[in-house]
Image 1 (spheres, one colour):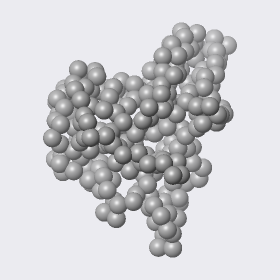
Image 2 (image 1 turned 90 degrees about the horizontal axis):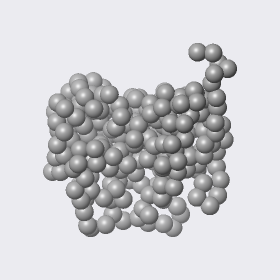
Image 3 (image 1 turned 180 degrees about the horizontal axis):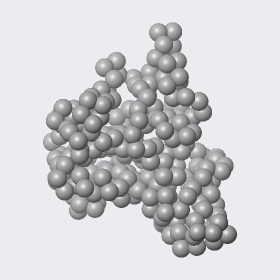
Image 4 (image 1 turned 60 degrees about the horizontal axis):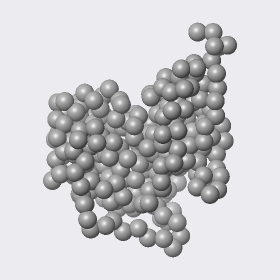
Length: 258
């Protein structure tokens, strides 16, 4: 295709809209759709993953009493803020789908040891490298929390790992080096586990859903645009129309917890 046939259009994607966009892309993945038929999918609780779980359960018509705003373990909030999961609705820690059926009684710790090739774990992250080849998960639990069974399954038995993570979590530098600093005996606070897998940010999401290429070109704002990103999408006229339609549909996604 002649480059002159390509057009570029810029879009502002807020953080919650980005989570919704990423979720729609994750459930569109071929490996996810294959796993729904004959394998197990584990969606580890997290704020971005809450959108993934909601989208996938809706596709299966098994949403039931799943409440997105209850679906997290550790969570980062602003100074002086506290969010406590409600007592109503599904309060399990993870969503486990076995051969297309939501197993409400199971979580990652229950099923990880039995996962094998063809099965998939979806786990969020707290940091993503600018080249998007690696992500990092902050660790507060001295036993490494959910990352322990996840890594045993992914590295030990080659279970697929999908990492939905928004561009607001992008970091400069090498995540391995960042982890080495945070994991040092001389460092206070959280530790970090570097992870690799199929990383899906808003940029990969646009590519998956429309075929167009997307590039981060600016970021930030106020009055709801805090942490948002300006993304330049390059593609054919048809691809840009598709991208605009998708982003228009999700652009007013309310913040998590609203």
